[in-house]
Image: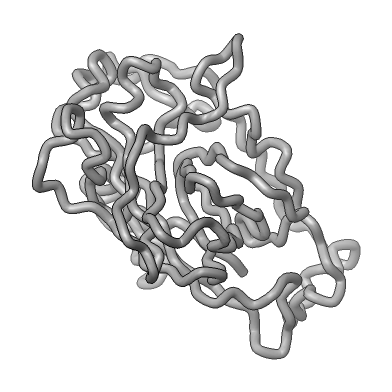
Length: 274
């Protein structure tokens, strides 16, 4: 169950926007360990590349963070050009929504974590949350703030210094149905640590999976009987330091580097192609 992140692994297909969400819900006969949300909203965080990665690493200023494939809301007329399409999420007072991918802040609202990577979690409230590339989390958010204005939703990178942070931060809008005006003012700053500036002090490492016996799904394969399974082969995968192959430094498993196959592995397996 839960929210998952899918993307291709070849070339720059993911960087070019080739990614999305897969949502797997409980079976109807299995209850969820929290109140049913009023709605589900997927927030996908991606990078905006306009230069090659080598150049990007040196300046970190020719791109930015996208929210659902869209650029930042013009919260600052100096930093953000006019005419950029931004994401606006319509909500009603009291409504709950969840499922987020990426680091985000929803100013004034609390994120109640409920699920990650196919597991329910010990439920905790966060004002911000660090998520690494490819990870997915689900949160419950109660829209309980003053509904007369819109609110920022902010996604930012943690590896940037403060002089670059605002220029590449993704900004979307949470729009209350009764809102009488746009979100204004500076962006909510991420929590900072005096030894590690711009790094959240509410790390995902403290996130713990919580297992509920009444919510366990049936296992028709019976693979939980590990003690009765006869082991026929044992494979050891060793990740070793990179080595020089064809005058290029490459990562290896068991001394072998990856080579892109002519036929995708799953198709080869399906059609018994070597």
